[in-house]
Length: 272
Image 1: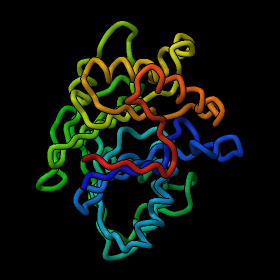
Image 2: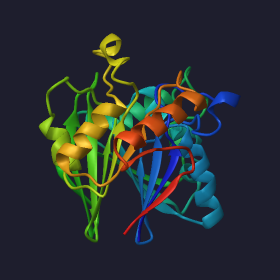
Image 3: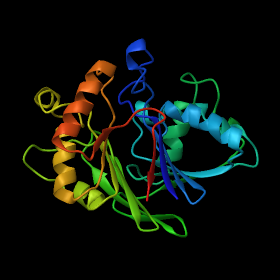
């Protein structure tokens, strides 16, 4: 089974408010369950709730893939309870830094005076891996992860996870150039069963946000159609886009292309 659960779908900053209940206020975190193995995409605030789920189910290992290390994608890292448990083990990968970079960055966000609990307090076995965006990864014997660099300040990495003939592309924090197709993105999403894409803005909002490193839900639909993706999950919602706004986006997107859905906290999907 290839299962996907969204634990956090918001971009930039968590927004726990009465106007962000339906679609959710937690920042980026997705869990893929691949035949009983667990692949985690990003470590935003949604990771805290995923950690509680791991403890309830006695899940003791996983592989984490980070797109990049801006705050909204790593804020949940110090609050993932299984990291503090002995007899647990986790592999943490990032493709946008130099050798040794990911451990250094995650340790620095937990160092004084930013945080009172250091990385060394985590009792699980943590293995940190830096790679170059564009490499293929093999987190499990029967799982292949394709990677590619994305267009984002300080760099970011996109992923395509392939398992038992199914594929899920995770392409967030990337900015498109109007009228141009990014070949790196196309390689990740081509014929994907599910494409999770950075849809922070609308096309109308985009001109004022050029250089910020994000894309639009209309561009997501254009890319999905161009590359033959079967479904598009609209993701990385702007914190200023409340439930009423996101409901309008969902209605309009579905009218334009029936394969579009709007991701929300706790949404679960199955491929196959």
